[in-house]
Image 1 (cartoon, rainbow, N blue to C red):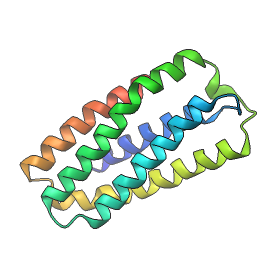
Image 2 (tube, rainbow, N blue to C red; image 1 turned 90 degrees about the horizontal axis):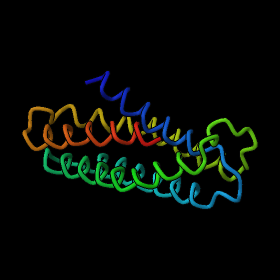
Image 3 (tube, one colour; image 1 turned 30 degrees about the vertical axis):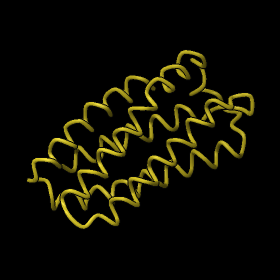
Length: 142
């Protein structure tokens, strides 16, 4: 489970930093970062307030759905801005968003630990399985 959490967090952070090297003219990149921040924040909040396995499974599904919705945008950004990851001229507002994503990635790891109490629940297992498949797609897209 720990390796899975580390891998998941690494993929999310890698996707965020791949998108982070952009200038003001990259409004679409900024929009994707904003959405990723929203999806991650919601997951952390949902996991913190989860009281049972159903809540945990619902939080995982909501996060997975949110990240899956970003896949086409991630692919488009990667295609449209192939050198974006190596751009050193990152504006401050983009750096702030990237920092927020990195902070949330740390919080996400902590939130995932709560799910370990419910790992034997079939719905949680199903949600994690789908999550793993979507995160692999996110990794491929970014």
